[in-house]
Image 1 (cartoon, rainbow, N blue to C red):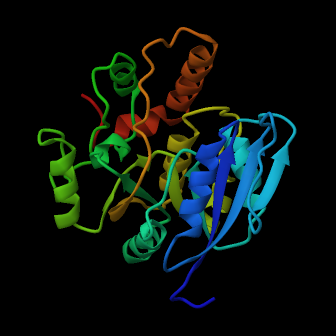
Image 2 (cartoon, helix red, strand yellow; image 1 turned 90 degrees about the vertical axis):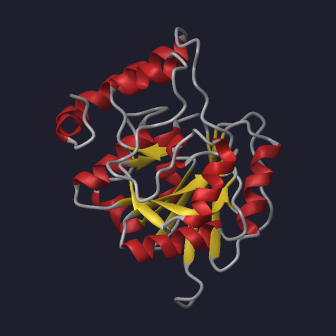
Length: 271
């Protein structure tokens, strides 16, 4: 492997995903300009997941949650660069290479993409506080606050088409506090430095917490313009009063308690 074709461990976590997993794997296989080794972690699917030849499958006997499952997959690889990809996400042909180049250009530790037909702030931005979370649960917004002064004024006024045009004309990368875990590319050394993804979070917001701990350790998190990744918009839960919703609310409260001092001192903190 030379510098012109970087090696990446792509970790895909699956749980009863069926054809979605097949599409995600196929998109990685079709990646250009990189050497991608795929690790699929089956988080206790029934029936168990099946993968094509050449894909490393790690089968867990039960659903251990997003953070634990992803850590298992990361430990199964050895590459200096790691990509986490949701099982319902699909890379574009140059998405991985675009993330690698942007990561190197920015000297960053973690990079996230923009998603097809979505404004950049739909998946990344300033670290969310409790007000942000409440607005999303109530359906008041589907976006996150931008981090400081954006190099390009991304927004929703012109819709997804305008957002795409801005991405094509704008800079290659810009700093963010976090990007959602649907697709994250990072240096293995950054993951090791913060002790991995926190497995005490079963489902969310382990992705935000991971990014913030990298930043708090002195790292840089960026969002990359270019070949986008296909992924459905993150759902806004309109019926949070159920078992899963309560568990997620508890996790959000723990996230806020852990990072409250940092959130309050951030330039984007609410007055």
